[in-house]
Image 1 (tube, helix red, strand yellow):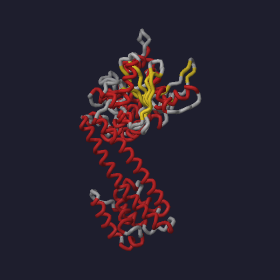
Image 2: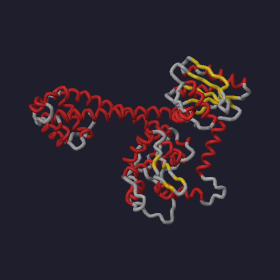
Image 3: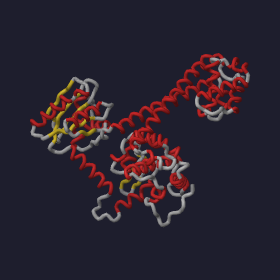
Image 4: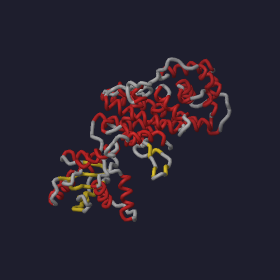
Length: 466
């Protein structure tokens, strides 16, 4: 994705007026490395652990990747306390004052290891599996993969400080993460059910889908289809014999039962008219409509569970006292913000807003060498779930938010380096992440002037049209 025009002026400002030549990125990197060095001091041996279900390979190495001890433990992850005690004794025997525990964040076993290490006051870091894979390829060009070799590679990458500090364990933030994961599963399930229902109706009863423009967003349409499929078991002739008046009464009763005020009579009449349509594969109609009835019930139950999960997520935001801050961003709902924070965890653990954007894979990736300047694209790394959550938030915030709307219009209409709609939406998604980081870390509500000019008062600031 071409975004070169968005970052060039910022990078120029980084180096201007800095006599030491050390950029802001250098300072942030140095701070991160210093923090990692505190966790991986030269006085500590490295304990690399390759986690599996019932086989845990543990190696103890020095900072030159020399293996000091190795042992395979046939146990579950929560029984690795004995392994950590063994590793500490081996390191002490070699003259080290302590150990640093490292593993890959695969599954949930690494959380158990982190807890065991914290109980023994051992520093704990994680190594990305992607880095381990790259290191495996560069090791001897054989592409060998064994638990014993992977444990050594994990320890080696840790000594090179190519590791990271995992998110601190917090009960409330942990609950939000799990609720976010459940919400994503329910969204995927709901979309799959809608697609199946649509495909089946297109085959055996396509006229039902033409009763309204967006049938699955209409409570009247779903209620009418439920009456046809549940009460009359998909017998369109039987439903038609009841007459339109009786059909309207049944649909009205179903709509009221679902908590709505009244049905849309136009849609009810359109569905009733579709009962006479003979288009579709008639031979498959009874079986397909029965399947549609089952899927429709599953879909309604999935929506109920989804609403319950989202209510739980917003209650967690209330408990964290963040609801007012995140919803101060015009167009960003509490559910949308909760979905983003479920992927990020506490934004305060990111030193800068740009670090959060990088975590989502929405940061620009430059390609420069000498006088050659390549196309700037997004990194696409980081958490795909966070990138998706930020992308979904764009659709709700773009129109009502004057700052985002103006930015989007500028990016898609300017003469130089004009972006496509998709590219501009990615820019807005990154802006939402930066603004979320700002309001949460500072504790101040979102301000449109600050979001536009970087300060609350700008001498040339013009009124922002809604």
